[in-house]
Image (cartoon, rainbow, N blue to C red):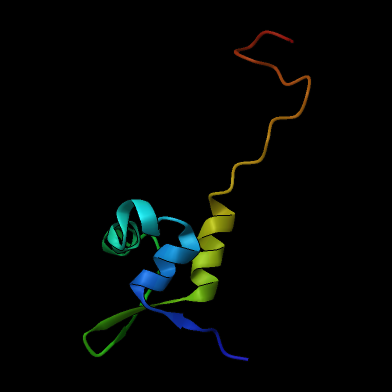
Length: 74
């Protein structure tokens, strides 16, 4: 099965940024080369797996109980 190519608006929806910034956030990720993309003629497409990988890589896990804060035991 091949990876689906998303346009920038679809990537924004998948990232959850569509309502706030529209296409601006995914376009910034592309401009800063923080995600890979595909050029199809003059169009920019982003593989769905790339967006999912970006989300996974930037997911922050919750702290565990008993974590040392600022060098002092809790």
